[in-house]
Amino acid sequence: MRLQLLSDLHLETEVFQPTPAPGAELLVLAGDVDSSWAGLEPFRGWPVPVLFVAGNHEFDEREITQAWPALRDRCAALGIRLLECESLVVPDAAGKRIRFVATTRWCDFDLFGAAQRERAMRAATYFMKIMRATRHGEPLDAAAVREEALVCGNWLRDELPRRGAWDATVAVTHFAPSLLSADPRYGNQPGTASFCNADDALLPFADLWLHGHLHCQHDYRVGKTRVVCNSRGHARKGEADAHQPMLVLEV
Image 1 (tube, rainbow, N blue to C red):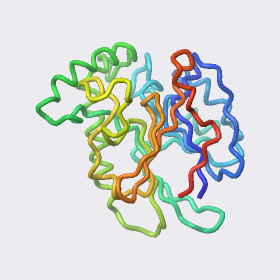
Image 2 (image 1 turned 90 degrees about the vertical axis):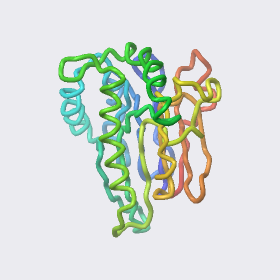
Image 3 (image 1 turned 120 degrees about the vertical axis):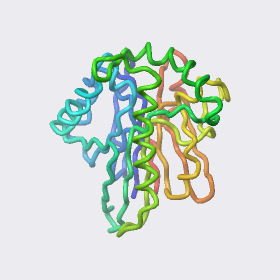
Image 4 (image 1 turned 180 degrees about the horizontal axis):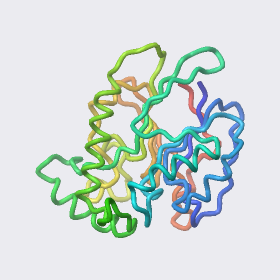
């Protein structure tokens, strides 16, 4: 299957016109498309199926428990398939069956181990203030994000190793699965645990792992698993310079 991958378009502030990539059979949106959700409109009537994993900024200034069903309804009205802790098997033109295992996979702050968790959570306070989201009426702070992350992580650990009638597995998360995806501008600092998880042990269960969140581009292999991030980010910071809007990946 030939997949087009886009993420971190941030259409709430960025000027960018998404265009279908020639030859792509499916489009994956790996989160942070538009915090206002208005930027989902260009994907209405997309010529191939669109799978969407929400990013953290899809919940900016929203009550997360209400935002999830509202976002699902919005996507359904546009013909976009929102996946959260869900798997979907899609056949390609040749009949190959591809399993998509998808979740936002919030950060659990254990990137550098449990001993560094508290320090990583303190560093996350800055990012939580930018989001200004709530959960059950209380601020979505680092502790609440960790609770959400543990649910996602447990689901991934149960789902990814499962065997079934499919030919390949593509994992799609917004947050990165490994420190190998850290932004080279910032490296191994406590704030990086707000962007990457230590899901390295799960990588072998996927043929391809797609993610966003880091405003940089990655394409590397760990064993048989290819990990790709094609985030666009903010043009004013030069983050969009290496973005490939027509990137197509084979699986």
